[in-house]
Length: 115
Length: 107
Image (cartoon, rainbow over all chains, first blue to last red; front, side, top):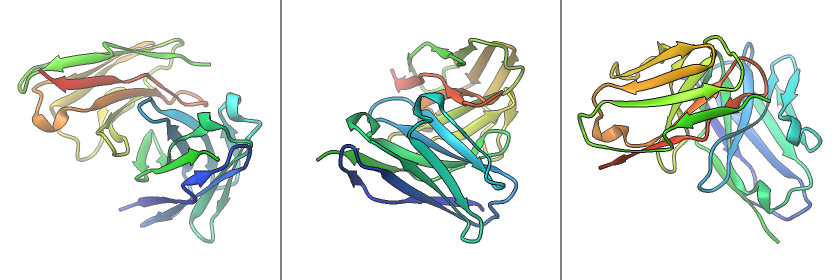
């Protein structure tokens, strides 16, 4: 059974870069789209972007200038970097696998932007 | 960008009730529509993809229908574990877009 686990700092200062890693276990990272989604406290879901195992990416246009998603197939991991963060970036960040839909999700990690 | 709307935003229902949630896309998405269930403090869980295909392990009381721009999620007989928030999501093209959610609460 495929499992995903997010890891990274839970607190980031304003204007700094948020960095998270998603480790995939129980299956290969090859052949799927690997996504980041976030959910501000008490609000809905927002798709951030994906990376394919080849390294091709797509990002939400409103975040495109601040987002980088990368993959390390040797470690079965993919990562998110979001630069110049503000309080509006405070959210639970999820990683998820996309096949026909987002069929496997990590448990999520809360990232708070605060000084 | 795609816009996804859901109605109602809140449903108050009893165990055994039939519940129907509607999702509308701002553009045609064929059947590239998924439904998720999210309980407090948990990650979303895929219920239905391709508008009507039940994800493995999901109870058959959940069903989905629709194509084009209008879609429906139906819970035929609400169970205690079904009280949650439900989201639709278009998977026709990137950027993926989620609906705002429908909270199903206990009457």
